[in-house]
Length: 290
Ligand code: C2E
Ligand code: MG
Ligand code: MG
Ligand code: MG
Image (tube, rainbow, N blue to C red):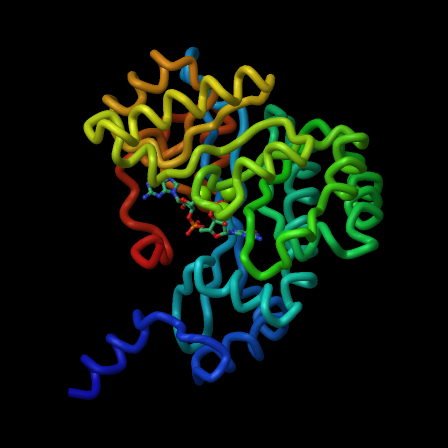
């Protein structure tokens, strides 16, 4: 009875601002930051041709005191709605910079870490200053930090983070459009924003190479991006077949469960030391919700 219901509720979707869970989570973000309930996982990014790890994406996880593991799919949206995205995003940035510094001090190889940033963050007037002072404080070369930006429907269509992107790239930080192809104006963003590359959304990859139109779209987008001199990263690569297809299309980088799930920092450090990927790591925190 009760146990089933509470388990069901734990996985029930968030419906919006009127919802108890939504209110509770939005109230708890700052507290969660203080109580160290947030943690970053890292997922390798692989050079498609060499199979070498050339970077990693930092992905946020929240171990909530009452609700347990919560997917960023849920709480990032809440954080954006409520403006808690700013302290949360700053925490992510600082944690990554501190981590890059620690790895360097420990003599581990330097790699690029990509951080998901909300358009809300990019539009804050002091965002570029914050990034710059973190790089200075931790003495990090900007080339090790990259940003992934996802289109969001929470903004008016004409609001573009073009100025911040221009300044960040001038600092030497590469910018990628995330989940490319799923937004309502992907092509228009590509036309209007100067970026370094795109991350082809995993929904296209998951249907390739068996579903004919997804496969054609993947091929055409890679070609289009290369004509625009952009780097293409395929996300959600789970099978050898998908990898081979992407190799044949000269996709630059791949990321996905085929190589590794996002892993906690101690496991990721084994990767940096040259250890084997944990392909079969059990479903980690909250991945069943995403
Ligand atoms: P994203 O940036 O597009 O991240 C990729 C998502 O795909 C991650 O989900 C990752 O765990 C998952 N994934 C990776 N490989 C595979 C695969 O082979 N198959 C499948 N099915 N999934 C795969 P996750 O970690 O749940 O993150 C979801 C989204 O939450 C992210 O999508 C990103 O938009 C957002 N997010 C995560 N961390 C942050 C953050 O620090 N800041 C911001 N603003 N957003 C974040
Ligand atoms: Mg991303
Ligand atoms: Mg995204
Ligand atoms: Mg994505």
